[in-house]
Structures are given as C-alpha cells and as structure tokens.
Length: 253
Image 1 (cartoon, rainbow, N blue to C red):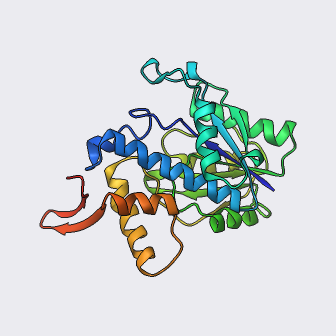
Image 2: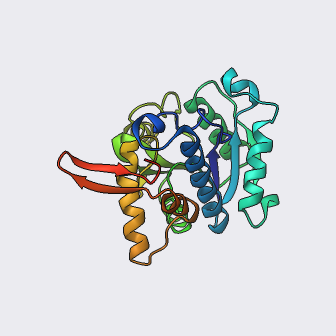
C-alpha cells in the first residue's frame, strides 16, 4: 500500500492560489473555493484508491501572520475531510516539518520509508484534479518496478512524486521538479517511471488547459473530478476562441 501524502493548506482567502485572481476572471474568494474543490477531489481519489491518505498540514505559526486565525489548520482540514470522505477515521493528519517544501517532503517521505517502513510513499499537492483513483492505482503499479515515479505537469512541475527509496530531497521541489527528481534518482542508482502529463492549477493559464479537459470529458460521459467539475459548471468557466487567441471566461464577469 502506498502512503499518499497530501501537502495541504487550510483553504483561506489569499493563502491558497494567490496568483489566480490576478490571472483569471475569478475573485480571491472564488479561487479559494476552487482550491477547496480540488482538495476534496484529491482526498476522495486517495480514499477510493488502494492508498493510505495522510494529510500533511502546516502549523499555525508556519503560516504568514496575515493568514493566522483562531482555528488551527488541522481542525479546518479535518472538518473538510470529514465532509468529503466516507470514513475520515482512516485518514492520518500530521504536521509538516521543515522550512521549505523540499525539506517538508524529504522529512515526511524519509520518515515513512525508513522509520515506519512503508512500502512506498507519494507526495501530491491537491491541485491536480485529474489525479484520480485510477491514476493513483496506476502509479502504485509502477512503483512495484521503479523506485521513483514522476507525474509530470506543464512547465517542469510534478503533480505526483512516488518513492520506494529516499533520494536527496534538497531543493528538489523548486523550479524544474521533474528534472531534479529524475536527476536525484539517477544519482542514487534508482530507476524512474512516469505517469501521463496532467495539469495542475495555480494560474489562469493553467485553467486554459484544465477547463477544456473537464468539459470535453463531461460531454463524452467520462469520469471527471466531481467537486472541481461542479465548480467549473456553477461559475460558468469556459475557454473561447477570440481574434487574440483563446480566453478564459466566466459567468462572474
């Protein structure tokens, strides 16, 4: 069984998807709602897969002062998971440890592999809606024959990073994540497998890729991430052709 670690933030306005309101028709509040929808889809996909869900959250004092509230992040995320999962008691919630994303990933993955002796560990951020149950189970199969599995996203990012052995995690989740992950795996003498390319969402340009995928799959009566698809439908997100190229539009305009 693969332990699927979701690096999750409490869905607070301005804290999550901060670039989206500046690059899309969505407001800050709507961007926060989209993050919550994608996070719910990630939780549900892990629960329905053969993996074990571990929600890795920041402590309050790890958040910028502007986003600290009287509610602890773990309480907020646990409540969200309880509304989404069939059995929230099966999910683990553990605080992030480390000053950077790479340090947090490294600390968590290494502890699970070496101390808890997990067979495999995967790291996701909860902003890749097409990381479905089937994709998670496919990745688990690849981890049986590869020590590292990478899910590539556009612009060099990785929406999934799976391991059966630790690597040197220093600064690996900064910039060209795919290349650094593969380089560190090769340096350690490990084999690397790959999942299909899939979009993550951080900016409006990312939605130019995601929204047509969702709409086309829905029209073809294929499986779509429920919460994210509902958000796209309710806000009327669509991509249209213009004389200047494709443009993201919404009913909020």
